[in-house]
Image (cartoon, rainbow, N blue to C red; front, side):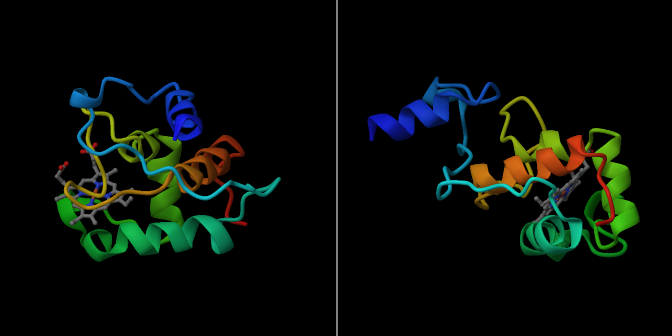
Length: 120
Ligand code: HEC
């Protein structure tokens, strides 16, 4: 257990004050994140799994995440990644009480965005 707590606390976005965190990002299995994260094989399946039920056209809140172009535009304007972090002061997606992405999935998406949010 100690090891997991350490892993959790090592995320800079993760507060260790439990009472302030509504649902922590779930620690996933040990991660192997591809050198180049693929939109088709990695990112889109995650978005499909967690987001498309509400965000296909026209999409809850007017947010449509069913195509590469739309996802890329939210990703590059920094509106996508922050929602995944379960920051109690921010917008949390998928909305509570749904369980969000695990830490591995969050890291993959972050890396894909850092690599330019390519259609690869
Ligand atoms: C159960 C339905 C539901 C699911 C699942 C869901 N969302 Fe949302 N989302 C909403 C609703 C409703 C809004 C608009 C209201 C709000 O901002 O809370 C919204 C708003 C947003 C916004 C706009 C936030 C802003 O800045 O105003 C983004 C970006 C977003 N969602 C991304 C995602 C992502 C990424 C996922 C998957 C990880 C996801 N959503 C899953 C319902 C959902």
